[in-house]
Amino acid sequence: MKNNNLTLGWDIGGANLKVALIDRQGQALHVIQVACPLWRGLHELHSAVNQVLTRLNQQFPDSRSARHAVTMTGELADIFPDRQAGVGQIADVMSELLGSNLCFYAGRSGLIAKGAVVRHTSEIASANWLASAAFVAGQVEQGLFIDIGSTTADLVLLHEGQPQNRGFTDAERMRLDEMVYTGAIRTPLMSLAERVPFKGEWCSLAAEHFATTADVYRLTGELDEAEDMAETADGAGKTPQGSARRLARMIGHDLDDAPLSAWIGLAHAFRQAQLEKLKKAALRGYSRNLIDTNTPIVGAGAGSFLVKELAVQLGGEYVDVAGLIKGANGEVQHWAAVCLPAYAVACLAVDLKAAA
Image 1: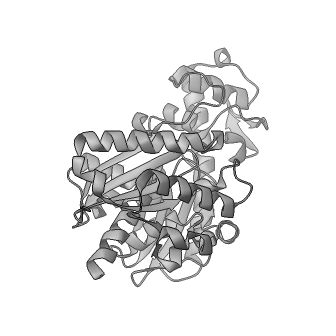
Image 2: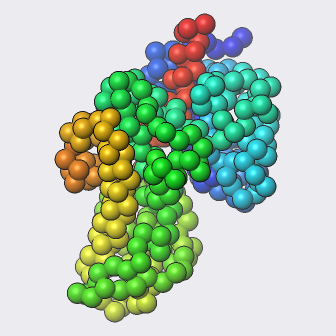
């Protein structure tokens, strides 16, 4: 017998798998994030899904018969020749592992059955942001929603309780600055600026994958250790000294060339460079004159601490999306905010069942 009380939302990324278990009232009961480096092969997705199912079945035996709703960005992994192939292969794996009681989020076409995937691959591809935006727009009528994940940032205007995005595809959204390829963990620092200040001088950056934004936010103390799941650029440790060593390489230095406090200062310079990129995207959105700059700025994702700082710099009221989520406790609400697309797509499935 199928369990009509529980729904699992799955957000399949190229680096992480995020899963939210909710009840029929939309309350998040449990949220799990596990590493899933999909670029290494589909076996990583098999392993990550099975890991999640094992953990859930131990704590929530009824989840074995829950309904599943799937959204994804993992089709961008370079193991696939194109998005269409990626969506199809990921859908096949999820169907194999989860059974027939599942649906896939296809953006404007809503939730669809496995048999319809082949006709909706372009709408399924990288649509997780729209599920999140739709959820937030149902809670915040006017404002700017910003979800900063490990790799990208999504910026969506909210007006009259609806997302006001102009783009839908990655190409459209990147052109319109509604998606910015900059995140709180995996982004190479060479993408943030051409030069940064250090010891009173401007220093050019090495065009090498020496360090990532996770190194920056380990040094500023803003990155939650539990969310710090990606490998480091050099495969070495995640200590402050390790992060400082990698930052030093970005400007042609070694760790011993300056005290740790100097490298922390350099981290703050990179932080501001990233904030400037995000601020320009936000100001472009505001220039559409759909909302005022004093409307709420809603933050989500592993980089929500950056959204909070953006709100300060832009003069808007900051609202953490965790406060909009129904959760069993504060920790579950926090993780549902970090893994918002998984929670949002599960809520869409619950609403669909309620309307049926």
